[in-house]
Length: 425
Image (cartoon, rainbow, N blue to C red):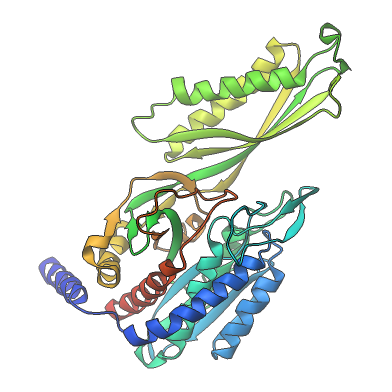
């Protein structure tokens, strides 16, 4: 029996590799639409849990296609359900829809000039992680597949997810809330696929990794208490800014001296420090907010324990006090090995076998991991850098750019991988 199953799998794999994409002519017609949608979303970005207009545009498009639409999922999420003409499995396709508190700094004709309030501060808002491309790609996939229901054996669930970057403090959101609200139920999803554009991978390429692909992410908050005094008399007080600097220095020794980095990568980053009101006053307190990235849960436990020991101890050594809170943001993005093996030929067919490669695990994080905790999933990277470009800008930066030419391959990959999964199962 095992030989028969193996032969069937290999036969299906080689057959898929020899085929051309199913909707080649329709893909070409779709490209200009997808680019236009992307530009619109890029010019009108919205922060996590505030994606009201974005969700409205998505829902309007899905409704126009005759797709069953659910709105208000996990606050601002949109879900579309497309039933094929034959019964079968249920596959989910996911796109994240939120933007970041980043002020755009480039010369794009469709750059964002939007501003909004974030944590009490007026900030620029920008799709600095490429979620605008994810939305447009999945809208294109929905249109192509809705026009070809006769080729769908089963059901496709389109999940447009808010707050992937994390909901505002004190709010629920993102994939975790979607799962909690039952997005993978009614109908029950059998497998889920997602992609992420990448500004440092050339257009036309796809990268993936079986097993642990992206890191678990945690958010930490450290509050330091000192004693206020005049800036000219530091001996009369306890400086929380100095203590914060010592804590930051100490945290980095956990990574550089206590973690076995030859096993897996790990990162501790302080991204925000708030303290003081005036140049000549040593303040009473300081707050630090940061992130921990790990690819191994045992390593994560060690890092958490050492941070909880070190932070109050360092503060005490300098006469102050400090507390630390650590909260989970995402878990490890884990690509199901069997599903990955099954579906890689689909990616190779649409991109070309030489344009699909394996990447090493990275310390970026994705709350797509919460979907993968419930059902088998595959998450892959789509090249977004202009070929031959000598300079690319990382995600989450003001100069971040994505080449529009990247998106057609995304439409092809998501469409074909969904149909192949349903047809193979």
